[in-house]
Length: 260
Image (tube, rainbow, N blue to C red; front, side, top):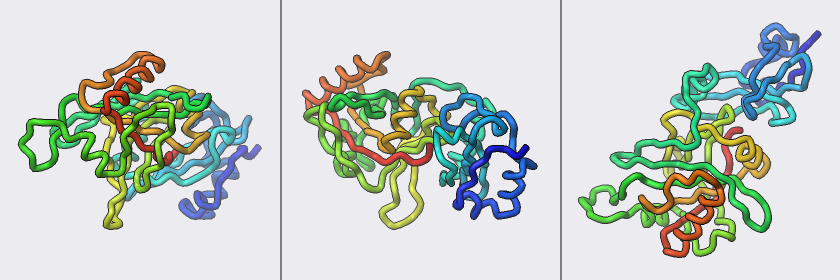
């Protein structure tokens, strides 16, 4: 019995007709798998399954997902991000609810949560440095984190109940069902670079992932060091965001979701 596989035209173009036909015939297709989107078990002989090809600079990884979660597609990631995705598949990472990445001497902490706007839930991430960030070339003291972001297109938030505006050239990368990076396009036309990147792929809740895949948009909020903190619940995170906004210490942008 042939597996119930979906191979999109984009995936077929990348792997070639011969490999695509082998997959559809069941020669190279797995039976059981963990869905790359929801991370729950699936089986190609029992349910419709999507082929998802993650393409890096020099390598590619073929993964599988419930067709009810995501369609068959090609996801472009950097070589480093692809290695991280492979580590997450093989179980070499430890999932958590928040992550950190270095940016120069600064460390950016990231917390994931959903935010309620107009009675609808939206996926959001909150970025907060662990210490003040000064403008490159400056000796400080001071904290230029928000001014630098505003120069990059983020907008000050005065009311958390209003959705932030879309910021062109930026995106949030979700791969293998985990948060990998916030990407910023090169104004000169080069490859996108990671403005924030997790040391290890960051686990998100099923609700956050479902909301992100449904809306294809993530709200990214940022505040200076010591403003938000690691809040254990989404209601407390909302209160901290509202307090930061009232004090003029919050900026935000809506970004398209890259990957699944």
